[in-house]
Figure 1 (cartoon, rainbow, N blue to C red):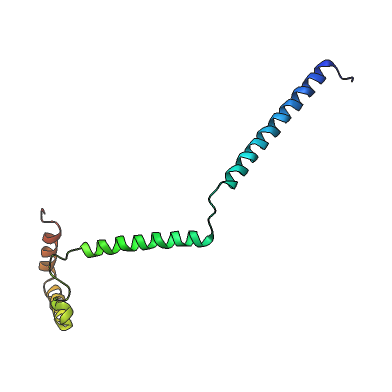
Figure 2 (cartoon, helix red, strand yellow; figure 1 turned 90 degrees about the horizontal axis):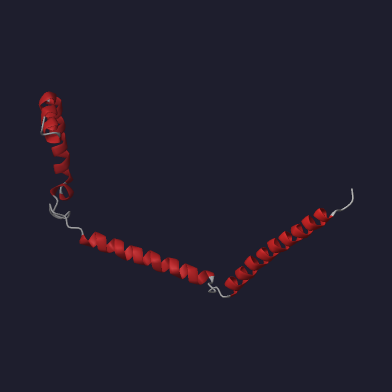
Length: 118
């Protein structure tokens, strides 16, 4: 089969299309190189310093939140359970004895405490 005019026209169109694809790739490559050349030069030390500064800022914000908390029922230092552990244990034992002696009454009190609308 001999090459006709149609084959020559299609070959020419295909070469033009191939040249356009190469030109597009070259343009993208050139733009990337220009951007990389003008990019800010960061070293690893700079990045680590930025991370440490962000961590310190977060820690300061967290400390401010903790300092702004107010304990409404009193301070922990004045808590009788912390100053006298025996008081906590005796109160716990008394509660356990009440539950074992009168389980139905304890359950009614518990239900009223949890859902007062019942």
